[in-house]
Length: 186
Image 1 (tube, helix red, strand yellow):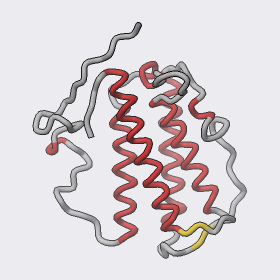
Image 2: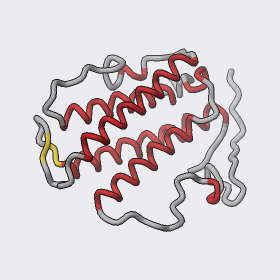
Image 3: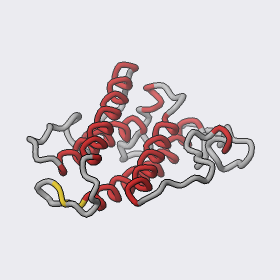
């Protein structure tokens, strides 16, 4: 029987936070972006960063720790899944030939139960590269109503979908991290 880790946080100002406000790299000191596109991008950047924060200070083995059977979800699986999702989104909006899956498909990204440092480094590099590629493609379209790709998805709809996907998986990451070492926070 496994032991349940004690809940803990590094925050001292507010006990339900991941880090103290003064040390939070996402803190904009109350300055919000101007415009719809800029607001969408800020949310995407913050959710991406939060996912990375939830994975910080864990080794490859810890990141590969699955939640509860029969689920195959793990933090490493989430990172791999998001790399696949970023690639998939980019395929939605480009007229180029679709790039193949990185790990065998969106759900196949979770089919990893063990990991080493090389796999982790590759996963993080894949995720960053796919995020940069998708961001670059989206940045080409300043009209949020423009319809792109075969599916004719509007830029605005794609951006909101990106926010939703990261937000949902950020919630999963909260629970997965708490199961691994008890760390909690927003």
